[in-house]
Image (cartoon, rainbow, N blue to C red; front, top):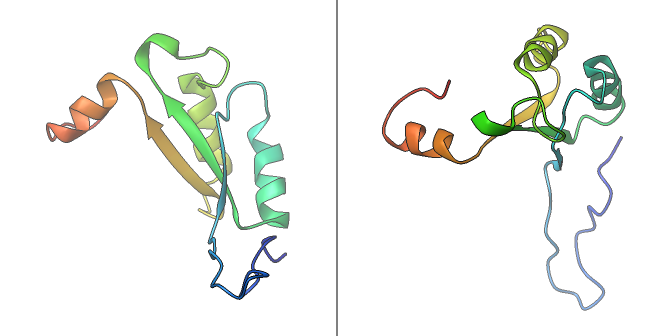
Length: 101
């Protein structure tokens, strides 16, 4: 399950970029977390990005809190690559030293 594009050199002989993960951003309620886990098991270099923004919770690309909890349960063994993308006020909270809600 090697990540695509891991060539050592480009055609011109210059060093290529080596990626450790490829992210898919906007995982939401439209996809079952078990499906994401199955894809992750097959392709461990895939990273799932979850967007957090208070005024968009539950909208497309912004998961509901219950979906995020379900994702956490599915990933209890910590085998999936996950990234939280903090939007709007969550960024300010973090920079002020507060834990995002």
